[in-house]
Image (spheres, rainbow, N blue to C red):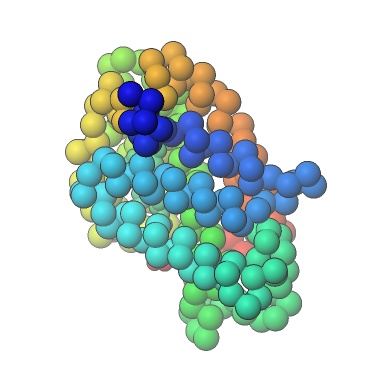
Length: 215
Ligand code: 1PX
């Protein structure tokens, strides 16, 4: 029915959120960035409780950023650019080791930013995959090339175990609820350049301010 279709989770909408992230002068809106992650977490949760430890960490980080957005200095957190400037100008970032600002917006967003690279790599593999491709392998390869570089052994081990229980490609596409495989491929082809642009802009901003290794 129409009603149940409305309630059904559709990944197109989630990935569309990343379109809204970019302002005219290519700044990244924190509100939409966070909303994009919220949608992704919802998707992850629908895959089962094995992924709970991953979504829990993502939810915590999303909440830290939302609290800044809704806090008394919220107007400084409208874009990632304004957040970086505000937190650096006011010495609100632990730059070399964790100290009095362990949950700065800058270091919190950096964790999600690194995860966005994983997403980009994984979606590109999904897009170019064939019927017999394994989601667990695509996911693990993407992870090893990105996030894993920042994770200790225990986390890598737990993540690797979770990947093993990912549904196969047909079921995975089903949960995405986008339509037949050709439509999934087309949707990914549209969404990926935007995700990639958001990633690149953030990466350059962080590189410029030497923030890529924040503790
Ligand atoms: C069509 C595909 C859509 C898939 C959507 C899936 C969304 C996944 C969201 C993952 C967000 C992960 C954020 C991780 C941030 C992080 O690196 N945190 C670590 C460091 O934080 P700290 O504060 O200590 O410096 C933290 O240690 C993380 C622990 C949790 C384990 C993280 C494993 C990440 C695996 C990412 C792949 C998700 C697999 C989804 C399968 C579809």
